[in-house]
Length: 221
Image 1 (spheres, helix red, strand yellow):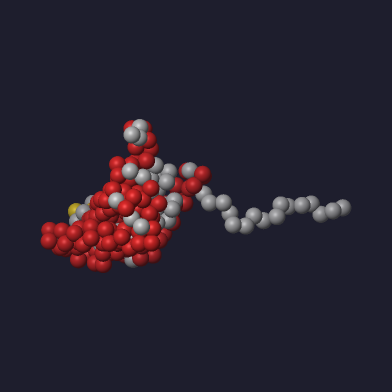
Image 2 (cartoon, rainbow, N blue to C red; image 1 turned 135 degrees about the vertical axis):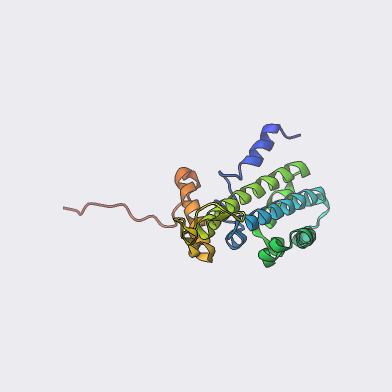
């Protein structure tokens, strides 16, 4: 039985220190595509976290019975089945958000974050640690989506969750929405800025340079 402290480290490490998006650069397609509003970012974050946690638990349960030759196929089948259930629930109860998310809920099936955690962790560990690890990585992914979604919606529309938070100039206020925030490039800029900020605060996350320039040598006299 793993110690509670071990579970806590497994859960909290992916939040900042080992965040799957900012450190491992996983799942950035959906992180950039669905963050034009906080509602879609929250829905995508919750969907991926649920799928990742349940998939990790199921794969861990049957890990000793999965032949290596078909392990990826079986993992994708399990993940795809969970994604179909989540997608049907969204279409039934949250149709507008489901339509805004378009194909990106279905693409959770091939999300590199989901496949990466099930392949590298859940396949080699018991169910409880695997689900804790999956939930922690889902929370880390969610934090990035929520941050980017908040910034893009506030500065792109002056709204948050559909409620006006900045007085618009066209209504007598002082704020003019920045339409660039609702376009794809803003997602790249914000994510790049977030990665830069975290690696500045935590230098150990910075990757070693591929090339080191030769040291300066004084000219021989």
